[in-house]
Length: 215
Figure (spheres, rainbow, N blue to C red):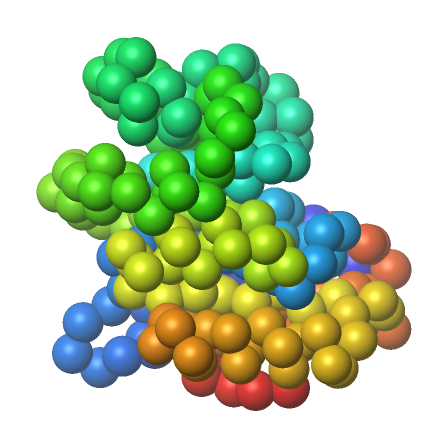
């Protein structure tokens, strides 16, 4: 697909996300998937960019503390970030980086920690997101796959999750298990992003989105 078409698709995703509720739009969203390699990081990055292009104040947080990839894609510093802020090594304001012409704010994953799930579910994480809600219009978090508990712990502090589904590799039972986990924990599914459909020749991009849908 052309870059123009891909940009249009992410603008469509942005519009759907912003209209998922009539009364109040989501302010903190986790982008996750059932397993690794389904394209969640690219969806999170491009969604954040689309939101920033709409003149919204956006912070993109790499919250996949096991296999962080945001800084690798954006080619920015990744050795300090979220974990450092949560354990009190540095104020979060000193860790935020700005990327691109639309001034997208980015918080890298930071130092490796032995207990990512506990850290993401901590009071410190809740307080950080509360601060971000004050400072930004929307927070986009690239979370770990739902095969581990990290994103479930993180999602409790947010307005819900976008679940990325790879049409070529995600098994129906994997998706069903992921959705069941989110439902059990009463975490709202804001939508499902279908990635790498047969019409899509570029592996890292999604093609459709449907708020509150199930596959």
